[in-house]
Amino acid sequence: MSSPGPVLAAGCVLWRHSPYDGALEVCLVHRPRYDDWSHPKGKLKRGESAREAAVREVLEETGHHCEPGAALPTLRYEVNGHPKEVFYWEAPATGGAFVPNDEVDRVAWLSPAAARDRLTRPADRVPLDALVTALPDA
Image 1 (cartoon, helix red, strand yellow):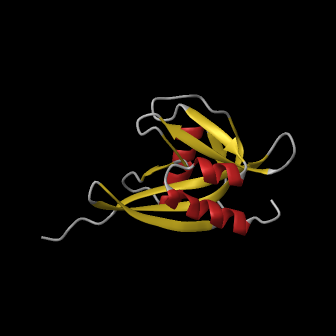
Image 2: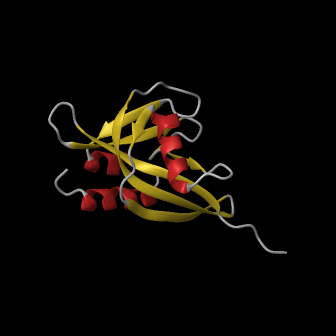
């Protein structure tokens, strides 16, 4: 019997220029179920591409529309003994507003350094660091 493939998920490192000083900010989401801070992401639905899932998840979790750009590193890890792959893109926020929901109760727009410190899982720093490298002048 062959084992099923990995659980597939997708998300974005959502970013904007601060409305106050124009500095780069990234959006992290707080999930009360896990009491963690992470990038907006979620599992692919049947027939959905990873990029489509990333856009949907960003909108569902943050209330923001986005325009995914460059692909960022894919994270691979185990959850409850099952392999998981999460595909990421860098994505500027193009409008919208956060409304708390059952899945995400807070968002935070932070400088990359503050976001790096706030992320619960150290592996989540990999796509963040790639974003900072890809957008040095942002």
